[in-house]
Image (cartoon, rainbow, N blue to C red; front, side):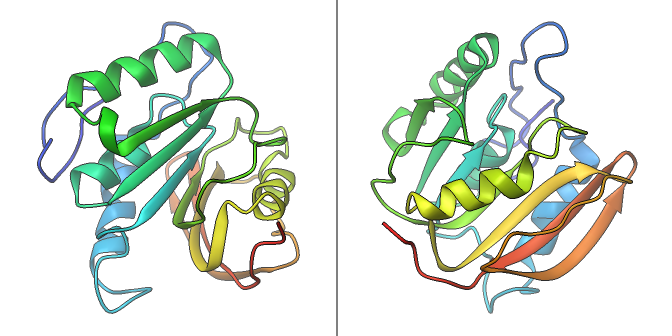
Amino acid sequence: MRIIAGRHRGRALAAPEGHAVRPTSDRAREALFDILAHGRFADRPVFEEARVLDAFAGTGAFGLEALSRGAAQASFIEKDRAALAALRANIETLGEAKRAAVLPGDALNPPPAAAAASLVFLDPPYGQDLAAPALAALAARGWLAAGALTVVEVAARQKFDAPAGFTLLEERRYGAARLVFLRHETAPTC
């Protein structure tokens, strides 16, 4: 697994052994960032100068790709200890410690946000129906700016209904994954 583009292009990312993390394929990540770069949801690349949240972060591939391509800052929420170690190693290896904040914890019960994100990636474990409750919890704790673009990865055939306050924009399938693009329509509640 590697960073696809930007200033860290081609740099390898560490991943923990075992099944604690299910990294998104390079193909799906590349397609996602192509969509975000080419004005589909904004008149410029969505990640440029964005505050990013990568929840259920695993290796941090989504947030680190955004930083590589020009995001201003990225926060990562992850609770698995092995994944946290890999995430921290990836941030250190890429020299992104000043622009990255790692929050050990559960996206279903996040800490209050220091600042709301304009671009959010959510990649929960497949088949556990965690995406909608995590989105609601993150919104309630101030993690999502009004109008934030949210990208949720779920299994291709997994049912997913966005919680109140989110509008479905588009869905794309890539192998076993489905990327769901949502717009957060309401202001943070905290």
